[in-house]
Image (tube, rainbow, N blue to C red; front, side):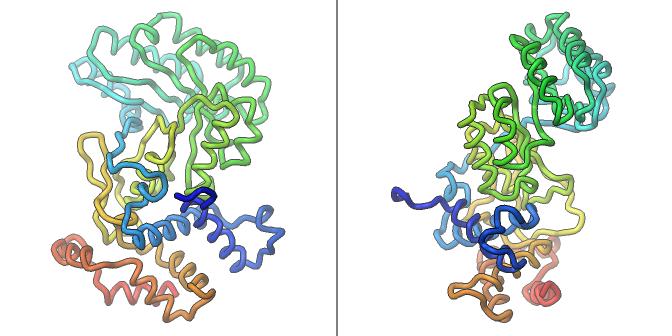
Length: 377
């Protein structure tokens, strides 16, 4: 990329901010103060990155960061701690457990230490590949809870012996600055870390938490941060402020396979993506008409092809239609031309052929998609 030329992610971010601001009547001066919905901006940036990458004939991850086509290993597992008794039984039976074991539901400090110690005792003397345990405190702990938790799980020495780490999400309320400072000091030298999640919304939130950056991990949800580029900028800003931890790429509950592809590209574009939970989930309100990521053991691999290597999902039609209509080569374009542009951006012969082969699975056709577009418009 020539010196001084903007990165594709930055280009699409500026376009999205400009177009959405025009649509909703924001002025130049009001863009930074009045921002549109973060999830809409995120979806729009992904759609435009798809268009640009397909024009260049490259995958989005290669376009954004020059990343290879290697997959990402899913290393965060929520389901296993939903049934602790079964997990302990599996470990006792010789099952090799791996990755980060995460409890997403809020847990109190006393129960948290009991859970960690029971897992550590079960793993003692067993073959395992557990990297660590992640617990969600839900901003409900007090400083005494934190100190007692640290003492309880370090007393046995199993954390160091087994080589695992313990990460606690949001132990204190956002305003508990003094709590955090003392907590960092108390955990120094221990294999215990704090992950900040709820205060993290993008670059601005990172700046307000600047003193914490050398001591924490970060959980970033792209749909909340406000865009593909915003996630990359969040990492850059954190590193400039001394960030030495890892980033947890978070998903919203209604994760779709399309979002999984986006997460793959983001993870390969970040330098510090330490926690990667993306996986397949049943899609509730949408159905994709494109090949999804393939899973090889715990590794997710994106399908081959330019852009996201994907056609459009119905939930994105309205958003993509809005941006095609609002931003053409010469400004705003008629609805009919916008509909044609959307169809051209969403389909190519390779995917149409594959759709025919998988007709039992994918029930869509050009005619049905056109009707869906008319309804979205």
